[in-house]
Amino acid sequence: MKAPTASAAVWLIALFTAAQIVILFVCGYTPYPDSNGYISLAADCVSMGDAYPVASLINEYPFLWNLGCINAAACSLALTGSYFPLLFVYCLMKGCTAFFLYKIAEHLINQPVAIIALILYILYPANYGEGTSALSELPFMFFSMAGLYLAIAKNHIVSGGLLLAVANYFRPMAIVFVAAMIVYFLKEWRKSAQLVAGYVAMICIIGACHKVQSGLFLYQAKTGWMSIMDYSTGCDPNSLAVREHNEWNVAQKDSVWRSMFIDWLVAHPKEYVAQMPEKIVKTYVSDNVNMCTFLPDKSERVYMYEELSMHTLLQKFPHFTAVQWLTVFNLLFYYALLITALVSLRFYRHSTHTLSVAVVVIGTIVLLLVGHGEARFHIPFMPFIIIMAATVIDKYNCSRQLRKSEKSKE
Image (cartoon, rainbow, N blue to C red; front, side):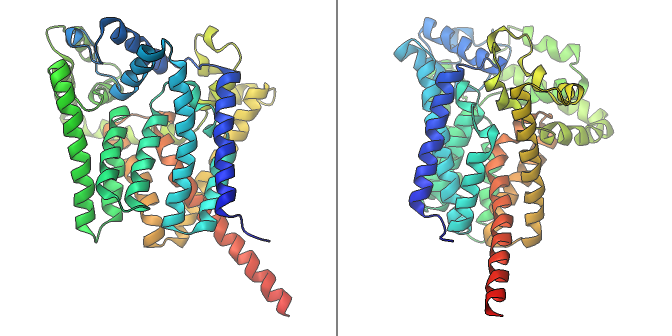
């Protein structure tokens, strides 16, 4: 059987992108709480004629959210009066991410594995519907994968670092990819230095722009210390009270949360470590979030995710709605990808596996140390889990072809 060609990959990516756009028009906007928050803050920015964070409100914000997401929504609202064009752009970004996945896998391993990875990515239900909301994962992955593509496949290392910093502007997790690339370039320190130089340069540019605009050097969200403090202490009243201190700006509030968490950690190291298994479970137990796209009457639901939660699925089995059946299929697909990715470690090769393994391992460690458990948090690792799974499928296919060849010779 003839292997699919690069032109087949182009057609697959085009169809995948078209499907994203069709889903956006058919299913409409998905009102996740974070997405609603981004758009609401963006509308405030437009009405006040300023970028986020609005300089005059710098002390009133309880925390600093994902700057890139809010300012992208503000641009869409300012230019068109609607956030819908931004969602259309996000759909195009999702299609481009599939292209970057294909090209990265092709460069790291080979073309057959790249095709398999692309097919898995396209068949995976969770990869549909992200473009119906303004959540941060999609633009973060677009810029992250674009940066890795430039650095790995095109050898534009500095440009790759620049784009990773842009990704960080949308979601403060790009340091995971920077660290993974340093591991990948372990014996090529000049490339690591170029990547870091590009990353730091763009952070300085973004930070300087916000310094002029708001008076603070800002280049990423400042919610991490608040989130881990609340998670670790069960929403300590003292921690919650920091939000109400309008004599502090958002950067000062963040530093207070950092100090509070460090004080708590010093006093409760065993409790901190004991929370790690739960974080792992909550991060990797499911991948159902994007299935909310297909729910009817989304805007009328108090807790949109409830129908698709693991608890509800177990309780309602086997009397599922169509969307719940799709969610169960997605779960089975997800677990199969995880298991197959783990199996790929049996065939570990430094040149082909290092980046994928480094992204997943370093990302998980970061979430354990300074994050909290949430299913959305593993989404940026999925392209690399898929690449790892594709290597196993390719190896199995090669073994099967070899056995057929040997039998034909007998």
